[in-house]
Amino acid sequence: MTYRTEFHCHTIYSKDSLVAPARLVESCHKKGIDRVIISDHNSIKGALEAQKIAPELVIIGEEIMTTKGEILAAFLKEEIPAMLSPQEAIALLKEQRAFISVSHPFDFTRSGYWQEADLLEILSEIDAIETFNARCLLPRMNAQAQEFAERHGIASTVGSDAHTLFELGHATLTLPKFNSAEELRQVIRQGVANTRKTGIHARAASRYAVLRKKLLRG
Image (cartoon, rainbow, N blue to C red; front, side):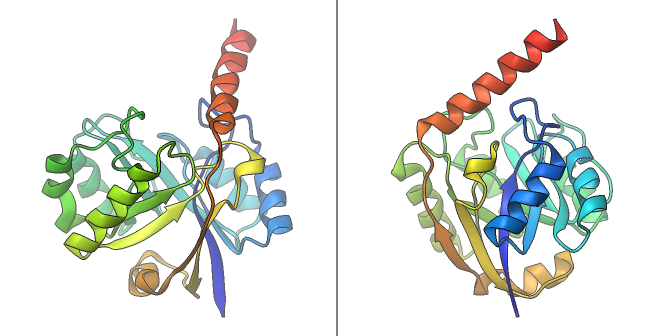
């Protein structure tokens, strides 16, 4: 048995997404996604809401902004606050025995952009790095992440980084069955990636979401 897994996606609990958790669950079922790690920015609320609807599908995740770059975590029990140092965030994640990766490490257009020296400082403490992110605008961003992973012998994840439903499933990893962070660590290197990029219109959709939310609050 294998799981087609979406490692990186967002709901309305991220400032730049308008996707309701229930609609994300529905879309996963339609697209044949077996496990989805919902990784809202600095929040697990969307994942918790979706997991109540589909506990067999949804894994609690979070994309955590640190003082250096963004960490992508799965199998969380408690939310990790933003703007801790990477070492502080990782220590809290290890207390939860979470699976720890990093998001789009070499995408310099993001606020969560890692400098290689900072990434090397935490390399021994993480489980994987995201070597393909469907929203990376330049091929060399993902290529650099893949080369870094191969050079340092660290496992890879891929992710759609979906902030809209049309992006969901653009980058998935098919893995042997897993039901915990420890089981995911054991099978992660067996993953078979299926990836395709999204266009710049996906980034535009996120900017629209930010603007719409501001207008509604105003």
